[in-house]
Image 1 (cartoon, helix red, strand yellow):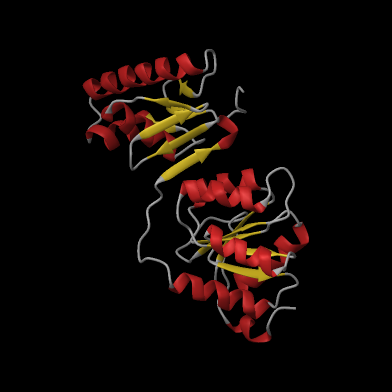
Image 2 (tube, rainbow, N blue to C red):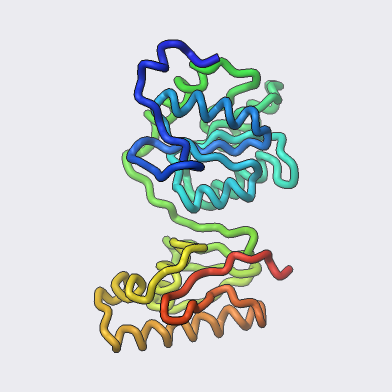
Length: 253
């Protein structure tokens, strides 16, 4: 049951149903829908915004989309378990991760901390303890954080913004600084469509016909490099008269 005192606080937002506000965002990666529902109730009543994923791959997508402030991660999930998911999450960024699992052996907990988790909560959990542990971890976070990488495992694509490096199908792609600038604008919005003017404004701070020509030529060069790795796979798609987007289809491997 929910703590009685929590009903007096302003509620958060379920981000699977509503848009984000300015509250801290918690991502729940858990394959049990009843547990997800319970955690959403606990967290929103405590004033957090919540978004959820039922498996590791979906969780990685939600990190790219919502940039959560903290992640609650289950261990025992099908396809990609919690530890493998955790390794992918660490390649994306440094969001705090709290394991929440029915596995409660000391060895499991110790191994989790050795791997770099921020806390470990065992099931069944006490509602108020979950909230206080989350608050304690959030108090220790840096004041500001930037996402350094985007990973799209279903497309075999990763983008390292700090080193300006793109990897596709396990192949490193050498992009010029300007090519990377164009690709980065599109990748950050994937899989959403990015308008021509948005790209031009971000890269050249103008939307002139000349900037449009430069943009189209750079996209042409980028697509040639992608095609060398996966011929016939249209990762970078042109939507005529509108803009570009990444098609995050299944990997060709």
